[in-house]
Image (cartoon, rainbow, N blue to C red; front, side, top):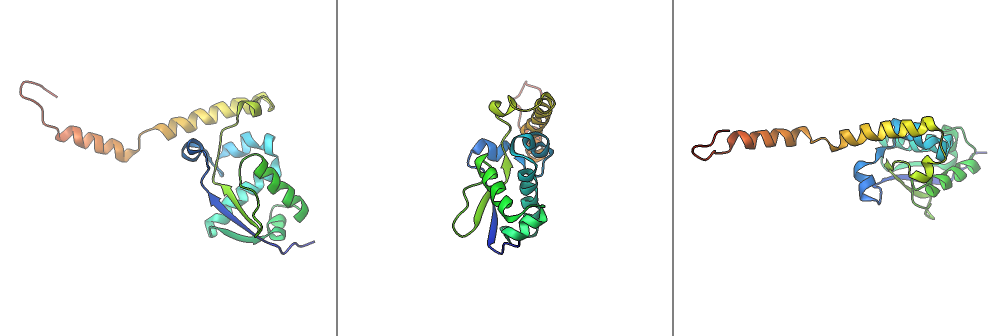
Amino acid sequence: MYDPEPLVLRAAAHPDRTVHRFGFDLDHPYLEQCWTPIIGPSATILLRRATALWRNAEPAHTTFGQLAGEIGLSPANMRRVLHRVRQFGFATPLEDAGVVDIYSTAAPLAQRHLDRVPESTVRTHHQLLSEHLTHALEPAPVAIVQRLDRLQHQTVAPGLSR
């Protein structure tokens, strides 16, 4: 059965500043490889589909029936999956007008989640998180060039060498 009720998916900044700055984009492999055992495959597909819809327009305007059909769910199951996405901190509660704010970044798994997933997922979590944070904490190339430029143009006091 087709559900024509409008649904608007808005990309939102994560309310936790650290997650907003250092979290994983929803199209990063971390979501699929680490969060799927916790939120389930349908919720993972919904989050991935939201990022694809945002490439065309943000916010994404659709219907419950249209989105459900695109990810292989019934409209009733679509509502349950949206509830699950909110329950695990990926979105705000559904507004009366069918508007959902989905956070565009995912937090790393908490210890309580790591305690529930297979060891292979724990290893993947540690590997992807380490790589992600190493990359996120590297100085931006522009900042490096600016620092080098300042060093090159600094005056040196007489008698001191560079």
